[in-house]
Length: 212
Image (cartoon, rainbow, N blue to C red; front, top):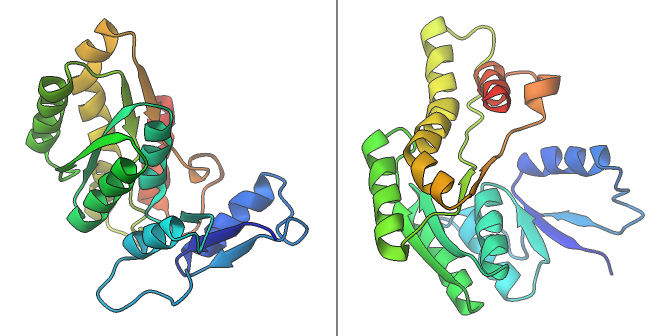
């Protein structure tokens, strides 16, 4: 059989578009995309349920707000020690648990994407606990649906939410990364180039990220 990919409602549409853009024939490859078996129980997040379904072998992968989680697991599989930053404690702890279950090393640090002091604490803790910092992945982002009817103040708030933390982290990590000849990975979006309805702030922020 083909791949079984978990995806939340609405998100599955964008994921299908990405596969098509990549030249992948979903039907020919027998790829199924949808909720994990049993759906999402009340009070549970998609990321946690999908991660458990992946562990149990019910799906082969998932795509949602869990993109950062998938990146964290990938780096751990390659032997990296991973520091996971998120505001959603249940999701973040679940990722670290999965990494540990697979023989990897990871820690979770609660972090507010809009708080410079939280990012400073994250960087300080990483260097203190592990002695160095080799790779920075800027993955956080939120398409908040701001369109051309949005007020200028709301537009700028959307840009700030999706862009400012990128510069902040690059600034805070620059000396450690330079010392270790490290790498910066900024996760952008196709909307930075193509545009899309109801994505004015998000698209502008991702375009600025590409330029940065």
